[in-house]
Amino acid sequence: MDDLARLDELEGLFAHAWDALMLVCLLDDGNMRYRQLGDAMQRRASRRVPDPRINSSISKLTNAGLIQTVTGQDGSKVHTLTDQGRRKAEKIRWTFAALDHYTLVAQVP
Image (tube, rainbow, N blue to C red; front, top):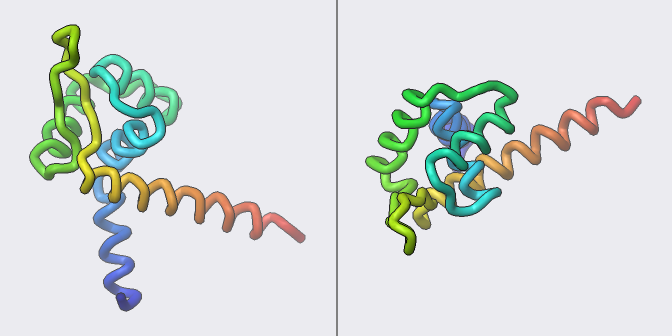
């Protein structure tokens, strides 16, 4: 993969920050109900995520085949990553770790 292809992939990973955040929340915290997902996103964003933003991300990520909604044993809807969504979330998580590492290295005198 050449550098331009890598940059195109990065752009795709972060084109919609809320969508990327939702994927990472599902990767880190596992399957979640709507409210749990909103709470997890809020913790990571350090601000309240409006319901329309959560609904939009769920819809876009479902249509893209990255998440799915299943009915739990108690009848509640639970959001979960698909295999494709897990791969994308892992790339996002890895990119976060690389940025954190770079920041730490850059701070060393």
